[in-house]
Image (cartoon, rainbow, N blue to C red; front, side):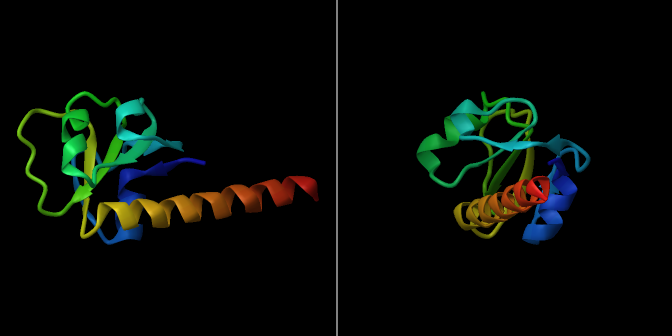
Length: 104
């Protein structure tokens, strides 16, 4: 499945810093992010990974202020951890529904 930053942002009621049309097809840890993946930054001790991750989209807090250049599109939300958890649940539901359809 593929989603754009804009679609994800609208679902989470977030705002976008970067390319709204960038697409993601998988979820990843921020330290393992690669092109086409979505990650999140919730704990400040992982902030350094934002500046080196290849994740196409990273969910961050609305008040996050980067201290270095970054390449990912950011989606700003109230709570990055809970937003990522919501997306993970929706992703798993969609995968399970798709698998069930393939059995029919």
